[in-house]
Length: 245
Length: 246
Ligand SMILES: Nc1ncnc2c1ncn2[C@@H]1O[C@H](COP(=O)(O)OP(=O)(O)OP(=O)(O)O)[C@@H](O)[C@H]1O
Ligand SMILES: [Mg+2]
Picture (cartoon, each protein chain N blue to C red):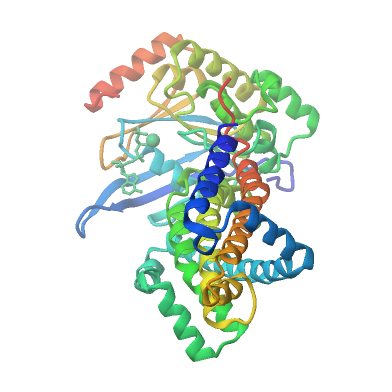
């Protein structure tokens, strides 16, 4: 209720602001809504959205799989950590824009370059988070698994991964918001389609209504993903944290 | 093991010959924790290990369980027959699995009926579907015991299974454990600092010295000849003579 009220207040302030700023600088919510509806019905908005979401999904998956594997290996083997840590630190602190521009220069304005650049931006982030998780693994549970002869698969599946689940959830949450922001930049700089490309075009035409329409549609989709995929996963991973009764 | 002619030759269930075990200490030095520790345990025997706090009892258990192989010497289980099970100083349950699922994970050797009787004997029947986070420490320790018995072990290692329980709970659980151990004839090595526990559950006590721990005395408890109180007094005298407190 409070959230809805707060959202309504935001729209109201926007409407008042639009009244004073004029339709060029800030079109009213109604205009933006109508444009969003129009572009949805023509199929243009959903098409661009799907292209962008596809890039988000692929880049995110690559970064999570490789980053987690790297992070877990670093957390469990101190020697490997010392070797890999400087690389991760460099990657972590390299500005996203530098990685994107270099990827486009070295691999051309291709889909591969775009997706690798995004994945490479997220990867060190996932690695660092999962490294924390691997370092926090409970040694007594390892001992238990060894004494009772659990197979390597059972150890991973039932002993190690559940301990890492909160770290996966954290990496997913921060990862999604990071990845979609970078995907838009990548599209703006070197792709002929996607939400980022549309925003770039609208910027050149000074089409504030379209910028707002596409931007807000994107926020809406990410919120849906957050509440119907990320949150249920977190709830599932934490279902055993029962409140004491 | 049976020989032609029916003469039964029993090999020890456990043969411990640890020359030295040390841990890396701060700096480049090593800290010697166990030294020249040798003993055997016969099948069906129940042996208590008593020693001062921090002397290396858990270390000894970890070496016997094969969890740590960085030591000089040998630990073998020629006549143990069956799996090894251990109850750790902490319950070591998986918090994301229910009591039943924690036990199912270790592939119990007992059938459903025997498991059911064990649940009853340990007072866990009503808690099978609960998660460890919902259990008191006393119950969690029972689950850890249950898990160890569920694999029908050839050698059972117990590392202070009742530590940090209140006296009433510890006494009850000890009585239950005594019943199960006596009925099953499981070869058992029990680490404890509680002499009552040692006397009630075991027929032999290994007294360890302070660091580096070595076998100071190997005491056979004459349960027939002496009362429990008398056995306890005797152990206290021996420990005092060794010059350390437990
Ligand atoms: N992994 C380790 N690395 C370094 N030192 C260790 C390690 N594990 C144990 N120690 C040291 O070895 C000694 C023996 O430890 P251990 O846990 O075996 O003693 P304990 O007799 O079980 O003690 P307690 O009565 O407190 O359970 C202690 O001084 C401890 O600090
Ligand atoms: Mg100990």
